[in-house]
Amino acid sequence: MTKSSLKQLLTFCFGGFIGFVVDAGVLQILVVLMHWDRYSARLISFLCAATATWIFNRHFTFKGPRRQTILVEWMQYVFVMSWGFACNFAAYSALVYFFNLDGLWLIAAVGAGSLAGLGVNYTASRYWVYRHPKKPADG
Image (tube, rainbow, N blue to C red; front, side, top):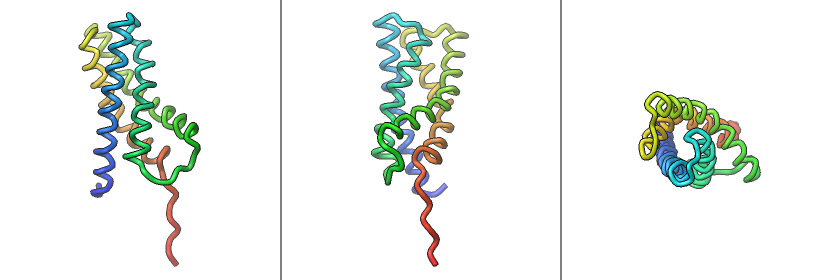
């Protein structure tokens, strides 16, 4: 891994931490304060977190020329993040179901889910949503 690739991965992870805070915060509001169920609330918290990480990643992690309009880019990003969210939601749901997690313990389940989807999300973001056109070879 090159130094620039490592920097990009670490920046992506920082954006993921922001997404985790948004995800866990929205989930807590919906479940604890508004009495939503732990699974439906997670779908809404995911959309909020995906939007937050998209904003961060487009400005800091994957700078450069854009191939799509802002709306198309957001839709692609959320679609791609849903692949990682499948891994994320599976880990979250297993922990919630088997350990009957609730309240503040849901934050741990969100964290485990975030780690489960990290590799899929980074790879898909880097090589699909934010891939840059290859430069023509000299000569």
